[in-house]
Length: 69
Image 1 (cartoon, one colour):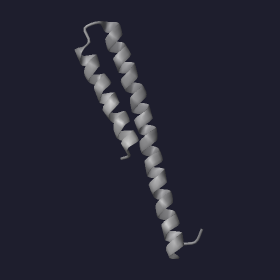
Image 2: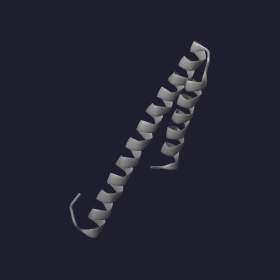
Image 3: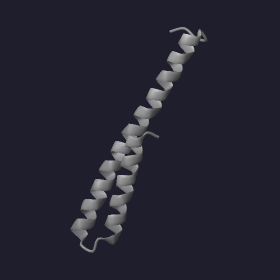
């Protein structure tokens, strides 16, 4: 995981914790919405990390002559 995706995951967890502690329903819902948004960002960042790694591996294989473009 990248630092960016780690940050997003940590923020989502923080928002869920804040939601559990919130006494007001609207505050709790606000924290849960924020957690969901951070989860989406984390998911996108993780997908980008996987795609970046796969592309780097593909380029390394081409450079090593193991496969063709």
